[in-house]
Length: 448
Image (cartoon, rainbow, N blue to C red):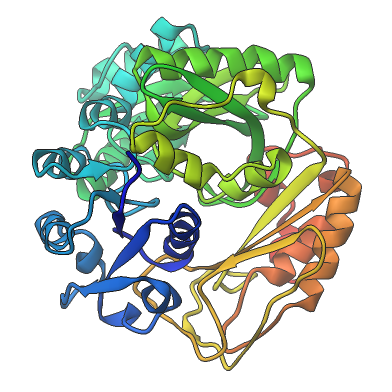
């Protein structure tokens, strides 16, 4: 039976996106909020809101017991975590389950399995996904790790077992750099995740970052094609697009990710992330067990409402589509309009004294920002997402340039100048892009 009322344990543009899907499904939306978000767009558009006052702005969205209590108090049937904050926290999912409240996402057990890169890797190897050569498990002894690194062959990458988002991740080019790099990664991992375990993988040179969108209902699963996400800063994406692969390769990798989702009994939206090397070989990275920031690209090229689909399967519905129902049309590109200096990439919080967003056919803006909005310094710098669709990639690029030039923002710096420079750059136009694109094109970040 479909939910009657859902509490959203998030903020910003993704909270607004979830509200829109809930309302389209006839479901009441309840927001939690902290002090900085008391008059935000999602809070104003929700059917009800619950204030969770905390001195630390982040704590309002990270206090598991306070959020569970809020869900109980408002009579929520389910909680949608969005992305970030508690979206991948197995303890949060388990606590909701104990109270008879549905967590809109995978089960606590699946979150725990996929949240550990080592167990996730083992599960995907069993399901038939390709992985890079790596350590057999977590390592803490530098001497043992050095031997394994030499066996794998440099360069290697050290990763935090419990982490993501590029935290606790270090590329090591040679043996004499290894011990200090490992200690650095362990320290960062312990600080960020409370878990200093790391593991090693062969570093994929000339790599492209490609991910597949998957939906599972606990038994069956389908995929919605791929997104290309190689333009990144500090291991975080700033531009995503799709499609990118041939029909044949999409089917080959798509079949594998569906098998991976089925193998763990996945329910909800998931993104299977890969690196592809210069020879075209794919290597599994991780599963992001939630809605992605860039889900919009897939919605545009497949004509689907992924957020609503995730809510439906969480309510107990089975997937109504089969793989042959998914058709990819045209090309979509998303740019993240972070409130950051486009040269230094440092955050640029502040009040928006003027705010005009673009429109027109095939132009979508996902944002909670508006004239008068005060962009807080406490949270992620994402101000808005601009997504365009057109029949071809070249047409999408032209449309995106026009849309970016239509934006009028006064009060904060944004990445708009950087995006305009990328969209006009020759290697980008030729699809000659790796995950080191910005490092390989320093002029884009020099303001010249």
